[in-house]
Length: 135
Image (cartoon, rainbow, N blue to C red):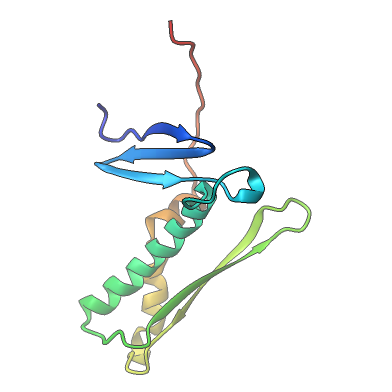
């Protein structure tokens, strides 16, 4: 099997599981969409991947410089376009600990700029969709 492939399975209802690198990532839809809300919806995982990737870069920045992380927080907020109902803006807010050196404030923001998820959103890959009937 192609190690870069994500294989999907359909365990029932509106649940879809993704099998990738030895992990099973469960998804479901909220009750108001006909699901049973047993797992995050795929779009929730998309948002969480951006937030956690950003958080990782903040964390790695602090660990590398031995900066205490007590009081460190990262919150991702989003604004929707009222016409399209699509997300129009994402804001990642980093609350730095009191002990955080002022000289690194801009550098930690640049570090988060390196988040692979964010970079793929800025320059998205081409997405091809193909279907074939199994014979």
